[in-house]
Image 1 (spheres, one colour):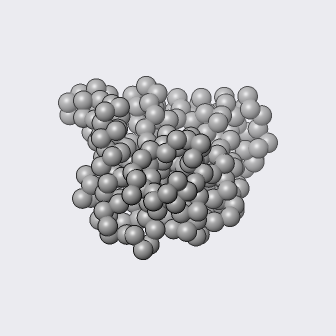
Image 2 (spheres, helix red, strand yellow):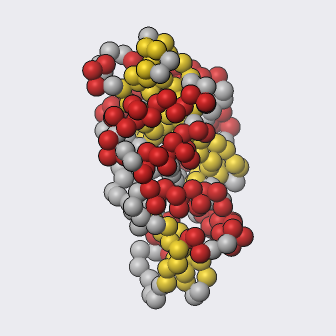
Length: 253
């Protein structure tokens, strides 16, 4: 058995295992993921032969703003092992390799959305923030007359200007959140289409106020693990800061 970080040109080799373990994603979403997301990911895999991937972990680079500083943090997804090879230590070997690499690279922390928190607690992950939807944070749970337009109807310039305004607003309220950008919202449009939904822009007073996803579910709280403590502590405003408890990260791909 070989354990390695795949060269990016080989990331596509993990698609059969992805569709085997996550059959609900097979089709439009899997195609979207492997066209738009997986090519940029760091994928760690266990394989018995070059094209025989039997266990994997994807690290999707996610751009955050942490106290105003841009930082790219790994979002751990697609944690999967072929059914007949589970409980043999393959995933532990991959995670140990990932933890060593991220510590050596000076990555402050990584995060994931667990199916079951009990799976990840033995690996040092702890519950951190709950999901909050953009329109609830920016506009409240309820409001008066509202109008929605398709995000696709906004020009690149309009959407980029909107993203800048959202970042400024969130920066006044949160220490840590997913950075908005033109590419962030355009990718979110594609993800929503692949999920059978659409990305809308909520207008208040005729001006874009928040992005709204129509395909969504009740997601569990995120879990995080500090990878390099020195790097993590450098980003804290004071020794008593605990940004994970106040973080706002939503709609992360």
